[in-house]
Length: 125
Image (tube, rainbow, N blue to C red; front, side, top):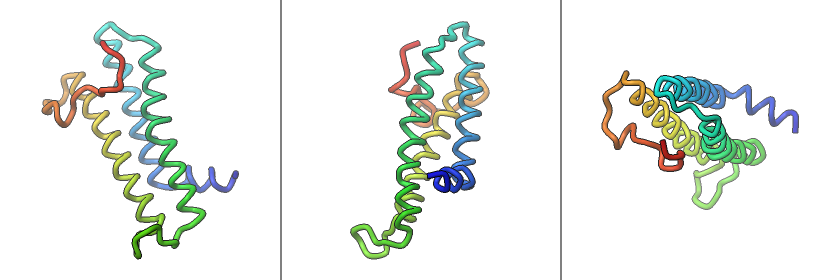
Protein backbone atom coordinates (compact mmCIF):
# COMPACT_ATOMS: atom_id res chain seq x y z
CA UNK A 1 0.00 0.00 0.00
CA UNK A 2 2.87 2.36 0.79
CA UNK A 3 4.34 1.78 -2.65
CA UNK A 4 1.02 2.83 -4.21
CA UNK A 5 0.96 6.15 -2.34
CA UNK A 6 4.61 6.75 -3.17
CA UNK A 7 3.95 6.09 -6.88
CA UNK A 8 0.75 8.14 -6.78
CA UNK A 9 2.27 11.27 -5.25
CA UNK A 10 5.49 10.98 -7.28
CA UNK A 11 3.53 11.08 -10.56
CA UNK A 12 3.66 14.37 -12.47
CA UNK A 13 -0.07 14.15 -13.23
CA UNK A 14 -0.93 14.02 -9.54
CA UNK A 15 1.46 16.85 -8.72
CA UNK A 16 -0.24 18.97 -11.41
CA UNK A 17 -3.66 18.21 -9.93
CA UNK A 18 -2.50 19.06 -6.42
CA UNK A 19 -1.00 22.38 -7.54
CA UNK A 20 -4.27 23.27 -9.30
CA UNK A 21 -6.25 22.32 -6.20
CA UNK A 22 -4.02 24.46 -3.96
CA UNK A 23 -4.33 27.43 -6.35
CA UNK A 24 -8.08 27.03 -6.60
CA UNK A 25 -8.46 26.78 -2.82
CA UNK A 26 -6.31 29.88 -2.27
CA UNK A 27 -8.20 31.86 -4.93
CA UNK A 28 -11.54 30.70 -3.56
CA UNK A 29 -10.66 31.85 -0.05
CA UNK A 30 -9.40 35.19 -1.42
CA UNK A 31 -12.60 35.67 -3.42
CA UNK A 32 -14.83 34.92 -0.45
CA UNK A 33 -12.80 37.16 1.88
CA UNK A 34 -12.92 39.95 -0.71
CA UNK A 35 -16.69 39.54 -1.04
CA UNK A 36 -17.07 39.37 2.75
CA UNK A 37 -18.94 36.07 2.73
CA UNK A 38 -16.26 33.60 3.83
CA UNK A 39 -17.69 30.52 5.49
CA UNK A 40 -15.83 27.43 6.56
CA UNK A 41 -18.53 25.43 4.80
CA UNK A 42 -17.06 26.66 1.49
CA UNK A 43 -13.75 24.99 2.36
CA UNK A 44 -15.55 21.80 3.37
CA UNK A 45 -17.55 21.88 0.13
CA UNK A 46 -14.34 22.41 -1.80
CA UNK A 47 -12.76 19.40 -0.12
CA UNK A 48 -15.81 17.26 -0.82
CA UNK A 49 -16.21 18.34 -4.44
CA UNK A 50 -12.59 18.59 -5.54
CA UNK A 51 -10.70 16.15 -3.34
CA UNK A 52 -13.30 13.44 -2.83
CA UNK A 53 -15.16 14.02 -6.08
CA UNK A 54 -12.21 14.35 -8.43
CA UNK A 55 -8.90 13.23 -6.94
CA UNK A 56 -10.19 10.16 -5.07
CA UNK A 57 -11.76 8.59 -8.21
CA UNK A 58 -8.56 9.37 -10.11
CA UNK A 59 -6.60 7.57 -7.35
CA UNK A 60 -8.79 4.49 -7.78
CA UNK A 61 -8.24 4.46 -11.55
CA UNK A 62 -4.53 5.07 -10.97
CA UNK A 63 -4.42 2.03 -8.65
CA UNK A 64 -6.05 -0.01 -11.42
CA UNK A 65 -3.41 1.27 -13.80
CA UNK A 66 -0.59 0.21 -11.45
CA UNK A 67 -2.18 -3.20 -10.99
CA UNK A 68 -3.02 -3.93 -14.65
CA UNK A 69 -1.00 -1.60 -16.88
CA UNK A 70 -1.15 -3.48 -20.15
CA UNK A 71 -4.38 -5.42 -19.78
CA UNK A 72 -6.97 -4.58 -22.43
CA UNK A 73 -10.27 -3.57 -20.84
CA UNK A 74 -13.00 -4.30 -23.40
CA UNK A 75 -11.70 -2.95 -26.68
CA UNK A 76 -8.35 -4.23 -27.94
CA UNK A 77 -5.78 -1.47 -27.48
CA UNK A 78 -7.69 0.22 -24.65
CA UNK A 79 -5.81 -0.62 -21.50
CA UNK A 80 -5.76 0.93 -18.02
CA UNK A 81 -3.16 3.49 -19.06
CA UNK A 82 -5.53 4.86 -21.72
CA UNK A 83 -8.40 4.93 -19.22
CA UNK A 84 -6.23 6.56 -16.55
CA UNK A 85 -5.00 9.24 -18.95
CA UNK A 86 -8.59 9.93 -20.05
CA UNK A 87 -9.75 10.31 -16.45
CA UNK A 88 -6.77 12.58 -15.78
CA UNK A 89 -7.72 14.86 -18.69
CA UNK A 90 -11.33 15.07 -17.46
CA UNK A 91 -10.19 15.79 -13.89
CA UNK A 92 -7.72 18.39 -15.16
CA UNK A 93 -10.42 20.10 -17.21
CA UNK A 94 -12.76 20.23 -14.22
CA UNK A 95 -10.08 21.76 -12.00
CA UNK A 96 -9.05 24.30 -14.64
CA UNK A 97 -12.72 25.27 -15.02
CA UNK A 98 -13.01 25.76 -11.28
CA UNK A 99 -9.82 27.83 -11.27
CA UNK A 100 -11.11 29.98 -14.14
CA UNK A 101 -14.34 30.49 -12.20
CA UNK A 102 -12.34 31.75 -9.22
CA UNK A 103 -10.38 34.10 -11.48
CA UNK A 104 -13.64 35.38 -12.92
CA UNK A 105 -15.00 35.98 -9.41
CA UNK A 106 -11.88 38.02 -8.64
CA UNK A 107 -12.54 40.10 -11.75
CA UNK A 108 -9.23 39.14 -13.33
CA UNK A 109 -10.68 37.16 -16.20
CA UNK A 110 -13.62 37.93 -18.48
CA UNK A 111 -14.89 34.53 -19.54
CA UNK A 112 -18.33 33.31 -20.61
CA UNK A 113 -20.52 31.37 -18.17
CA UNK A 114 -20.05 28.18 -20.21
CA UNK A 115 -16.33 28.26 -19.45
CA UNK A 116 -16.15 29.80 -15.99
CA UNK A 117 -19.65 29.64 -14.55
CA UNK A 118 -20.66 28.76 -11.02
CA UNK A 119 -20.19 25.19 -9.85
CA UNK A 120 -23.66 23.60 -9.65
CA UNK A 121 -22.55 21.56 -6.62
CA UNK A 122 -21.39 24.63 -4.66
CA UNK A 123 -23.53 26.07 -1.87
CA UNK A 124 -25.57 29.16 -2.75
CA UNK A 125 -23.86 32.50 -2.15
